[in-house]
Amino acid sequence: MKVLYFASIREALDTDHDIVDLTDDMTVEAVRKLLCAKGEPWASVLSNTSLLAAKNQELVSFDTALEANDELAFMPPVTGG
Amino acid sequence: MISVQTEDFSVQDLYEQLRQKDANATGAICTFTGLVRDFGDDKDLQGIELEHYPGMTLKSLQKIVDEAKTRWNIIDSVVVHRIGKLFVSDQIVFVGVCSSHRADAFAATEFIMDYLKTSAPFWKKELKGSQSTWVEAKQSDADRFDKWK
Image 1 (cartoon, rainbow over the protein chains, first blue to last red):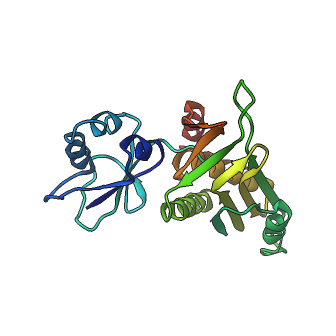
Image 2 (cartoon, rainbow over the protein chains, first blue to last red):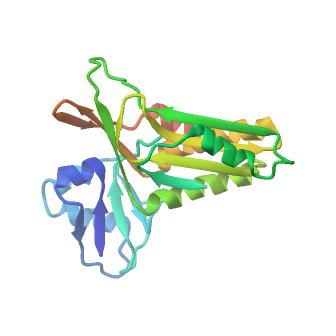
């Protein structure tokens, strides 16, 4: 599954996406932890409590379940308008 | 109508679009325009860069407009949000609502803006000389949206 990054998160990780192997019953939080386990900078960047997650282009809570063909994105709090 | 675009927009043109919707029933049109301002102390802000999550931006704005339509009696609405590089005093965003009565038009316009500020996936970066800094989300924006919950 592809995980997209935006804005300051993308810059801090120096990449606009990662690929993760999704196992059964994985939640957004499980994917976050998996990426944090890669070490720095993921561990710091993705541990920020203000981190937002979107599944299939809709904001979701971190306990949301994922399927293999979902699109997941991690992003900082929005600043549009 | 919802649009995410790099090009500037004409408030007059968007107002005319609203005016043509159900002309007999429309009694009130409310519009809001957001502009780039120099909010730093050092006054050397050159501009901003607006990033967005393509696909999600349109979905998110549509969801916001749909929510406004369930809460108030709206005939139609227009939301335009620009992306890319903008300079101080450039137009960033337009929200317009037409309705039979002003209460619905005022409230829906404010709601759409407050909701957009906390949930639409756009991110601003300040450009100052050779440096650029991401703008931080404001607690005041989250507080403003809380009042609509």
